[in-house]
Image (cartoon, rainbow, N blue to C red):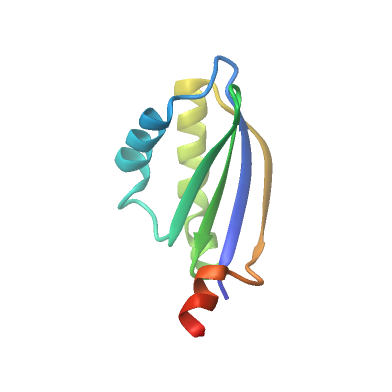
Length: 101
C-alpha cells in the first residue's frame, strides 16, 4: 500500500520562486529518493506545503534518516521551519484508478 507524507513549512523571509523551487528539487531531491512523487505548492508568501508519495510505508521508513538530515540542512541554509507533518497509508489515488479502469 502506498504511503503519503504531508508537510507544511514557514519561510520567515519569504518562499523561493517557483523556478528556484524547481531547481532545488532537481538538484537536491531528484535521484536522491525512492519516493514515487514529491509535490510542493505555495500557500502564501511565507508558507508552502508538500506531499511525498512512497510505494510503501517500509520505503518511507527506510528514508526517514535521509529526510530528517535534508530538512535540518534546508532549515540551516534557508531558515525554513517545519510547522506540520502528517503521514499515513494512501486510501485512494486518482492516477491509480485511471490505470485500473
